[in-house]
Image 1: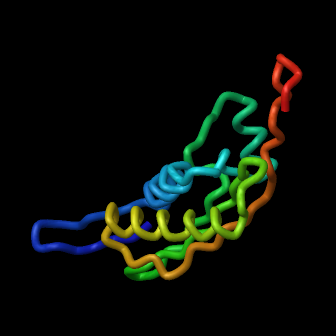
Image 2 (image 1 turned 30 degrees about the horizontal axis):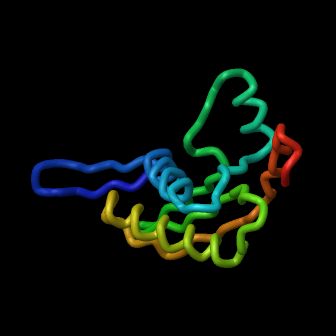
Image 3 (image 1 turned 90 degrees about the horizontal axis):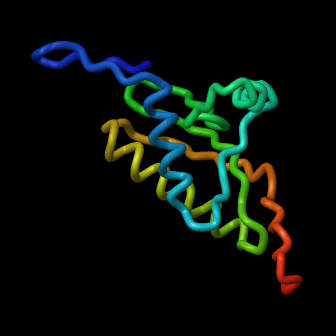
Length: 123
């Protein structure tokens, strides 16, 4: 959690808020199928505890943040291009929302979404 003391009081931004903003920004990039978290996060989802922060690690500094995201991409996309777009969008959106400087956005492409076969037999 980061704290910023202002004239009128303290402003606190939790890691979860930063992670949520990063997750939404990543999902806005065409070609990203989903966030890909740990096994523990997957088990929590099975138990009905959905999280917009799945697959996102936040490391806070005094006035900056570093992020690591695990994503699943759609089959057929250019992975380096999608990862770069995720980095750019996450950096821009987190900085806009929080006022924090984003020092680093690491993207781990952990899986590819397998396309479902069409029912009419066409590819």
